[in-house]
Image (cartoon, rainbow, N blue to C red):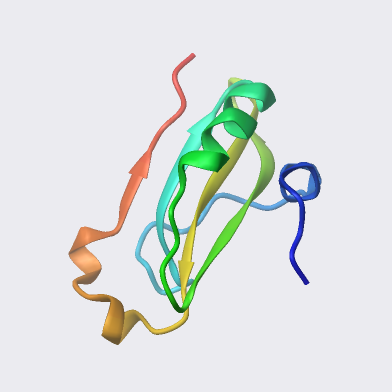
Length: 89
């Protein structure tokens, strides 16, 4: 099922663990939903990749995140290259 951007951001999902074992290898966090929604169209996926994300909160308040999930970490590459971009306040 291909979810719309709105559906993706409406889902409650914790942030990725950061070690890549969950298959999420790149993600960005945003303090404002509209910033996350505006970022989504810039993500370019290749074969065996999928858009993931959702919303959660931390000690500073709500946040939204979007990222890339890969189906095969071994084929994707180096786990040390797992990358996140955190939300500013």
